[in-house]
Image (tube, rainbow, N blue to C red; front, side, top):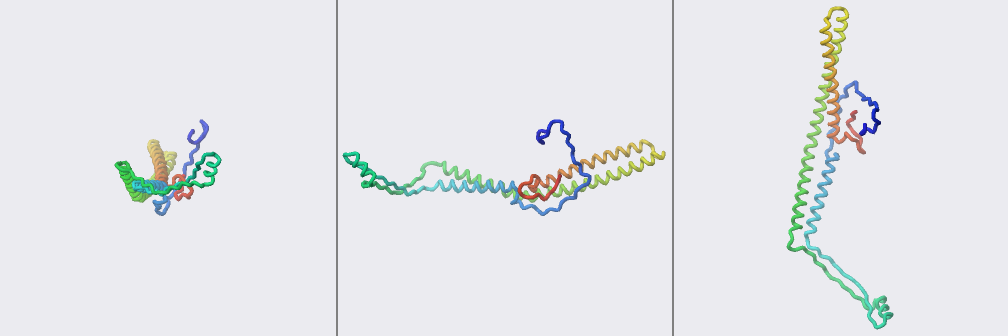
Length: 228
């Protein structure tokens, strides 16, 4: 109740479908559009940028530097300030500054670490891309198998129901023993339980398929698998 935002004691009614929806026919999902793949791609790109930055930091830095200032020197403060503000005594400085770190393996270790991280992310991305197609195909096959089981359970329930109806008529006419009717009714109830369980497993399989296709929780894109 708390997760649903409902008051304690609220009556909840579940919608139980009376028909079994057929297995949807969907085109294979492009792995590049999946959020998990996009996330791994961003991590791989970031690792590549970090490696490039570490390699760049290992090179010597050569900077062009310069400065300009003015000064004033006189016995009187007024004349000294006049020279300073008028720029009659300019000071110029230009040069090249070379910076390089000697005798430290920290930068090399940083490069090795970031290269390993980049290779790891690339390997994970390739594996995820190759596994995504297989996972979708497996999820589709599970949905098809669950659908076949649900259809079979529905037919079995129908046969048991018809048997109970026929035996009930025969029992009312005095041609059937009560124990036979009770056995048939028990078989019908068991078949109904099997049917409901099969229906649930089929809808779970549909939702798992939608999850593999990144369509269980809709984002800005429309979903292809419509399940309740």
